[in-house]
Image 1 (cartoon, rainbow, N blue to C red):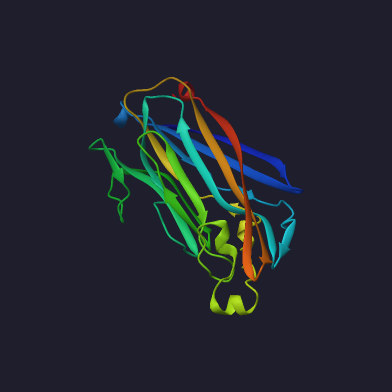
Image 2: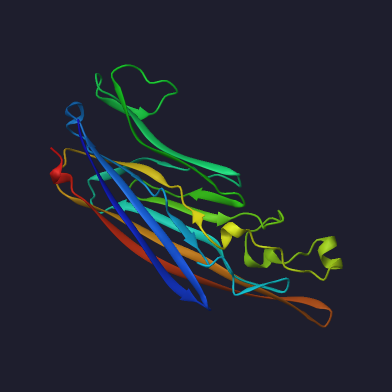
Length: 262
C-alpha cells in the first residue's frame, strides 16, 4: 500500500461595509494506491477545520431590532480535481435539514482479496481496508443541500432558522410578522451567532480514477459567501423592508503529487 497526504491551510478576508469577512480554509487530501487496485487511484478529501465568518470580530455593523447586517445566510463550496480521469466516488453530507449536529462521512471499504470497493459496512470483514474521513460539527440553525455530480463535489450551506427559531429562506424572513411580532412593531428576528462568526464546513469526499494514474493533479476549491442586511421601517402605517445582499468569492488550489506515490 502507498499513500501520501497533501494539505493547504490559508486564511483570506475581504471588507464589506466596515466588516471583515474571513475564510479559514483547510484542504486535506490523501492519495491511496494499492497493488490490489492497480487500475484505481483514490483521492480522499475533506475541509476539516474550515470556517467562514461574516464578521471576524463577531459583531455585525448593525445589530438592532430595525436593522441587522451583514450576516451570513449561505456558503457555496465546490471541490474538484483538474483531471477528467477522476470521478466523484462518494461525498457527504447528503442533503439535510436543520439539525443540531451534522456528520459528514465519506468512506470506502476496499476488499483486498476481491479487488472491489464500496460504502463502509457496519462491521468490516477481514482482508479489507477503510479509506476516507468522517467529520462532525454543530450546525444548529443551518441546513446543507448536496448538488454534487459525477465530477464536482458541490455543497450549499444555508441558514434555516433565526436565533429564536423562525423559519428563514430569504432576507425578508428576518421580519417578525407573527401576531406577537406585529404587536411589538414587527421587529427583526435575532441572527444565530454561527451566522456571524465561524460557520464550520464539513464537506468530505473521495475521487476515484478511471484507470491507472501517475500524473499530478490539483485539488481546486471555490468558496462563495452569501451575505445579507435587512432594514425595517414604517411608512403610512405599513411595514417597509429594505434588503441588500452581497456575494464574495475565493478560489484555492492544492497541488496533489500523484507521481511521488511509489
